[in-house]
Image 1 (cartoon, rainbow, N blue to C red):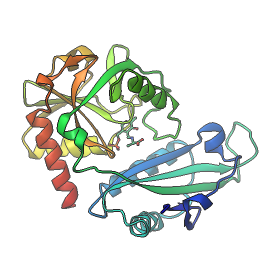
Image 2: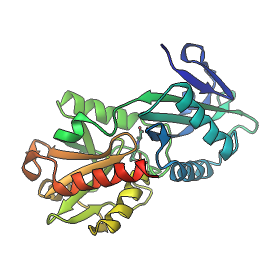
Image 3: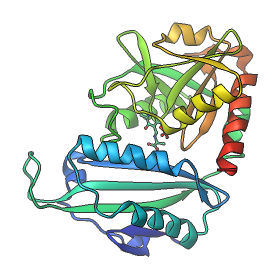
Length: 282
Ligand code: PDD
């Protein structure tokens, strides 16, 4: 059975969902998005995702097609209509449909779409074994803090990692790790000290990142927001990545070198457990 998806105010079977070929997200990637996890049929970290959405819209001087309360209702309806107990909701807002001119149109009708994806998030096979990654150059634009739909560099990076026989890639710029193709990069030093890159226009402000740093405080795990190199990551006691679609995912190999004995480490496992518990009790 196909999904029920949302397009511009209507819930329709996925085969019936249509948007214009003149939509600016189709022509220019002129759109923003959010991916929110669902556990036990409930939205995880929903409010901070919406705060980030507001920020992305503001930075691009884009309107919000429907008010916050309706956005939330739309998310909840999608969960209910598709019987999602665990998975993701993808939501995208575009500048809308207009004749193809580069500058922002004055009166384009914005497009809002959303759909669900079923995914095992809490009981993930990959989280038990950990994943392998490679490092690749970061070839993206300089407003990575905006959650834009322009994700071609990341798609290329994922494809490169797939062809290299690994699960993902961390991107490198000016000798430092920026982030994963669709996740935030963390390393653990000396068995109990987290390091992740500080927020700037160089990375997306991850919502899971934010929750993990809060949980680290509660769990008495020290942390530092600073730049780090891939060599430092390779010598770390543990490495992991975070995102709405993987929560806390252990990284056990980087560029063919084993991290922490090739097994998910204790700090990573603890943070993953704490994150899932907190999400369940939200
Ligand atoms: N991606 N960095 C990038 C480039 C991302 O695309 C993402 C999320 C993250 C992690 O952010 P968060 O913790 O808020 O999910 C970091 C989503 C999951 C995606 O594109 O599917």
